[in-house]
Length: 184
Image 1 (cartoon, rainbow, N blue to C red):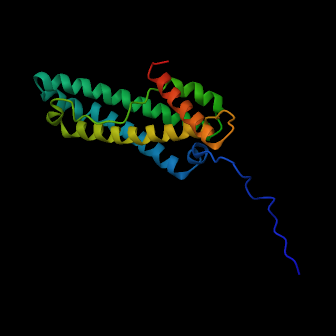
Image 2: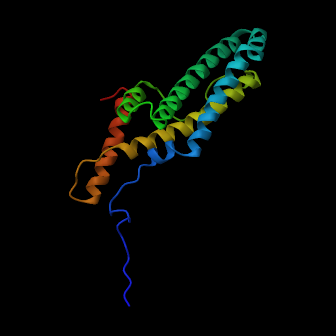
Image 3: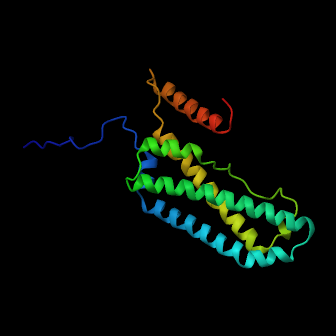
């Protein structure tokens, strides 16, 4: 008695699974989307309400720092919300992958980082500091996701060996970063 195994549905060797496509369709993406939009809403409520009152009480350099950092916060959140909206529109089938790439080029995500270098940051109202820190944490996650999604969609040049294929992928990833940074 012989048993045959049907391998017709087994994945072909060398098939690359796109992290970006799977992530964008996942519950984790939905959670990050909700978190991002909630942070935008919380920031708007804070800056229009308690933050405005707290800003009026500030004097001198701290007042100027508040204005500067609240504008940076708003800009950062708008960029993050744009990224999330583009990805959601693609997930919902509202835009194509080519449209995602075109729209994504206009979004300026900042490199991962923190405000530890800003003189006087500790003197800002706690509400603003909390929002800024939350925005940086979300930014860092989205930057990592964006990089992973880009690498997953990059089409490496045909190579004679697996090592050459990996080198081609690395070169493509670094050339994208340089182009975004305003280099080549």
